Length: 129
Image (cartoon, rainbow, N blue to C red):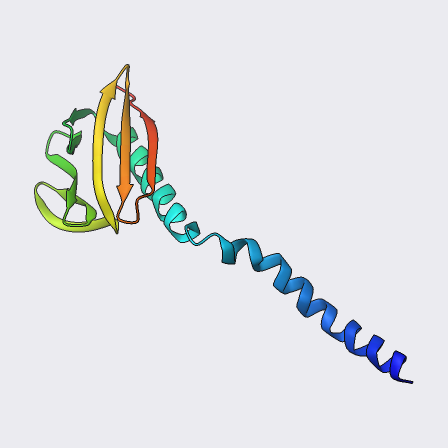
């Protein structure tokens, strides 16, 4: 009887153990939320580039002109990257940032982001003009 009881208990716990084992990789990867946020940031940046008629790149700031009456600024502000329209407003695109650099080269802009935890991310964004 005790063998049957043990087998039934194990069988009832098996779905819970399987579910726990499936989530262990996400528990171990503490940077997953950061990587997801950075990926979203780069996606937003690429969308801004597609809208831009003219883009001015400095090492620490990016100016995008989607039309003649707007200027979109992407810049480091304290420990965030923010987006401003016509030098007003304050839309946070990414938190916990130590530094960001932009480099224009061969029809692309290389964006390097260093997070406060030390992780670094780089993406090459294509220009359409």
